[in-house]
Image 1 (cartoon, rainbow, N blue to C red):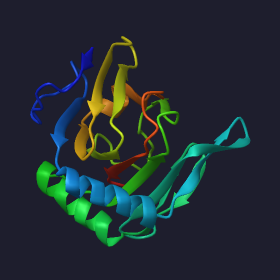
Image 2: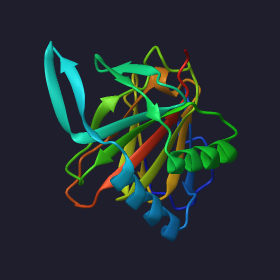
Image 3: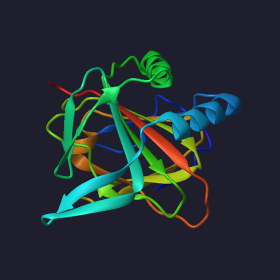
Length: 202
């Protein structure tokens, strides 16, 4: 099912069962969105993502950065990252997202997709360090991209477009029952920065 955002209602659950996904639409004006995109592109300590697959170190074109309350470590794809201290802009964004959602977050994983050719394969954010069934607040700046969910058993797919300056929240049993991905596309050559605010359990 494709949901191309004709009407945005943050109280509508986009998933038909076994999880909760709410799309808040554009939280930020175009001017503010452009400002944050520029700041994040130029001030975040971006590095190519690393994954160890079948014992081999793989570097992705996509770049990542990890920020948090204090130097916690976070392990996924068999590699461990240590959180950098928050920047001023990340704390501003965290406060806005917490105010809008009523959730609290202690860390943020950022992804930089340089163009539509870079994406993310099907996966779920179910690492043991994450708060179980906790909320993940996903903020997008830059190129508008399709984002999809697929039920792990029924294979049902739900897709929507993530807009410049928008917020998507995944919570409850979403990560247990659903995969999600950012499919590559040839329709844009512009960059996209995605921030996923999370709660790490120490």
